Image 1 (cartoon, rainbow, N blue to C red):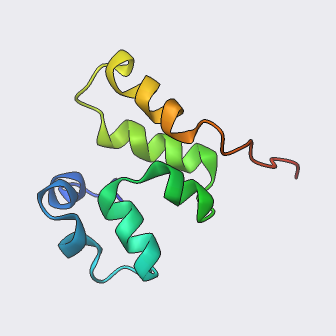
Image 2 (cartoon, rainbow, N blue to C red):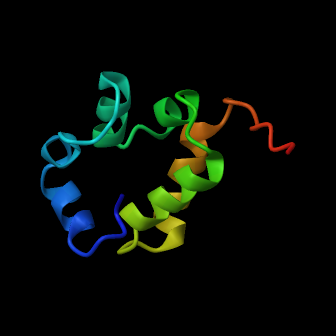
Image 3 (tube, one colour):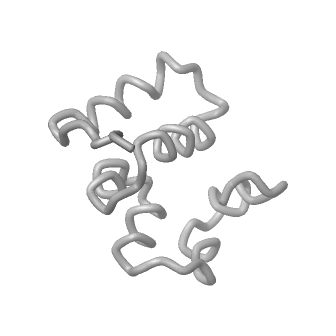
Length: 84
């Protein structure tokens, strides 16, 4: 979703406007707009996808600044079942 040139900037300028035409439920739309990582994880976003999306959102910050908060937000939610 944020790979297309200009998409990240459009999302950051107005998340809800950016998400208007996306095939998302209201809960999904609100969680994405709010960057609510725990809610997105509970809604079923794959842990790898969620992490990569967070990295993209925080690309201008050092890992030391955003990653501890990201992992703290997800602490206690359990581990995904990655058996294939």
